[in-house]
Every structure is written in C-alpha cells, then in structure tokens.
Image 1 (cartoon, rainbow, N blue to C red):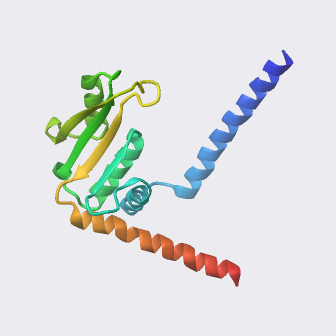
Image 2 (cartoon, rainbow, N blue to C red):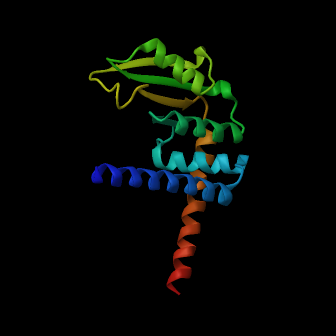
Length: 165
C-alpha cells in the first residue's frame, strides 16, 4: 500500500509539473507567427532534413510533419508542390495509414507518390509508418531553410563570446 501511495503522489506531482510547464511556456511564447513557423521549419530541417540539395524530410511524428508544412507554407510554398511517400511495415493497414497522412497534412490523394513496404512489425512503435515529404522545384525553399542555420549558429557563437568575457 505504501508503494502504491508513493507512486500515486509521484504521478500526481508529475502531472502538476506538466501543467505548470505548459502554462509557463505559454506565457513565454504566446501566439506563434509566420516568422516563428519559418524558424521552426528551419530548425526541424536542420535536425531531420536532407542537407544535400533536395528538399525532403522523413519522420513518423505527424505533429512534426505538420509543423514543417506550416513553415513551408509561411515561406510562400504553393501547397500543390508538396509530395509525400509513405513507408509502411507489413502489419499496418495501407488505406488507413494513407488516409491518416493525407488528412493530417491536409493534402490531396494526387500528392501521394508512393507507398513502400518494409519488412518487420512496428504497429506499436510506428502506428502510421513514416512519411517522406518532398518539394517539387524546391531549390529556393531549401536554400532559405538552410540559410536559417548560420543565423542561429551566429547567435550562439556571439552568446558564447559574451559569456567568456
């Protein structure tokens, strides 16, 4: 009983901290602007995107992918230039997964390029597989996203110099 009581209070304390953290960060951030969406897309691309030349990003987190799309649209990318490919594991339902990604990213069926099957079972870990997003004729948008990185690096290097003086 004592262990269960301790667990209960630990869970309760953790839930309270999550609520408090959401409240605090909401006050710090406020509403997100188009500028913020672009910066978020740049940081997501820095972390997850292809750095060579083609603008593409692959991930299984639909919120991450939606945030990336929001940033691209804020940059002025026409939505009809977005294409997706879906990677599924053999234990997933193709129709369900395809509909999920199209709905979550607010895309049309014509924007789905392919569905690729991977061996193995990931239903519990990746219930909707992975989505690869590519941009047709995305060179300028690729360069804009990559151009955000030096600004962020520059901010940190100047902050590092300030701390050491």
